[in-house]
Amino acid sequence: MQNFGMLNDQLIEIDVGSFSHLSSTQTNNALKKELFFATRELHKWLEEHAPVYCSYLDEQIMQL
Image (cartoon, rainbow, N blue to C red; front, side, top):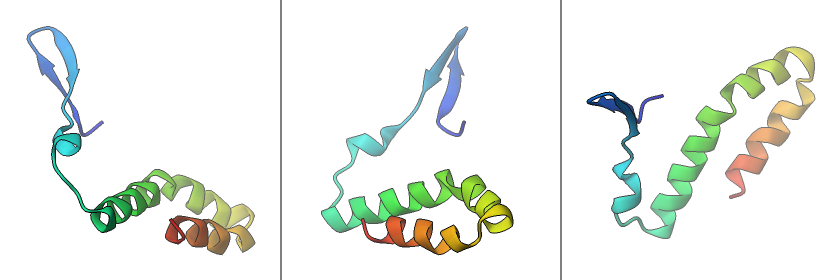
C-alpha cells in the first residue's frame, strides 16, 4: 500500500529500493525487517491460538 500512487488515471508502483546498492548485511537486515512487518498479523494470531510457535517464527526470521 505504501509504494503505490496515481499518475493521471493509472495506478503505479513506486519502489526505488531496488535501485540502490545494499551490502549483504543491509540486504539481510532489510529482509528481516520486511518479514517482521509481513508476519505481524500471523504473530498476533499465534500469540492467541498457538503461543508456542511465536518463538519459532521469530527464530526463523532471525536465522536469515
